[in-house]
Length: 216
Image 1 (cartoon, helix red, strand yellow):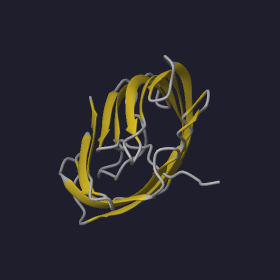
Image 2 (image 1 turned 45 degrees about the vertical axis):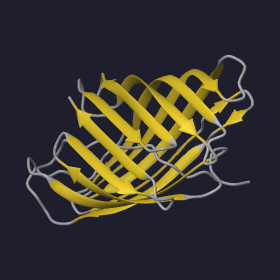
Image 3 (image 1 turned 45 degrees about the horizontal axis):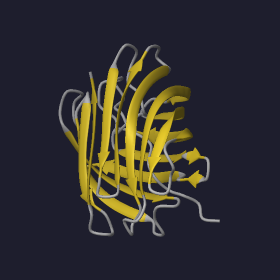
């Protein structure tokens, strides 16, 4: 059985006096965070509201297509995000996250809509110069399995102050079960400021990727 690799994650740490790479799929209490991930075969966008420092609710959607373009699926979800655990050190931080989404799925080979459940976990560790993360999420409906997960690693080019823009290099490996027979590898350049990031790259299939995050 193949194991999927893909991505879940992203947001900025709004703490300390300098920005870290990213801390997870929600912002600080009473903030709204919007995220997007766009490519030829996977397009995702959503927003959530953090009603406590550890809990957020939101909504979004995913458009997914197989490599051979024969399968196309659309998933609209409402979701809940929980910061399960945070580890703070003098110059680093680690986080463990849980997310649960649910909503209608429609697309190729489906008669009408089916209810999809999408639980997932992610973990990250970062400093002002290094970043590592791993994430996995199950996308399950009756007769459908599009599980995916990701591994990410990156480094910043130099130190900056909290309000300054910082460039990062990020390398991501991900895989989508039932949609692709290959592991997608994407090197990306990321630009981070205290409330946003934008990243762009080209994967090993020569397809462009564009991701963003913004905290209101």
